[in-house]
Image 1: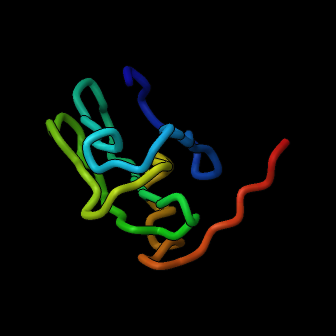
Image 2 (image 1 turned 180 degrees about the horizontal axis):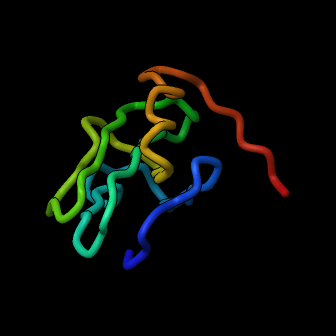
Length: 90
């Protein structure tokens, strides 16, 4: 929030303790630009994705998600529902 943009190679990954639709819900209040939102379940499969627009109150995944990835809007096309993702630990 309160930023003016995000680099195309940047993003943030939110991790919930359990998969849930309500816990994975986001808002876009105080955002000044669109972002790609990708919801991922506990099996690392994409369950939903949306282009989130500024100042919208609620975006929720269509299925329970454990991970919520917020990144540059152009990255939305890089993900499809049912894709399996691999997370590397650092």
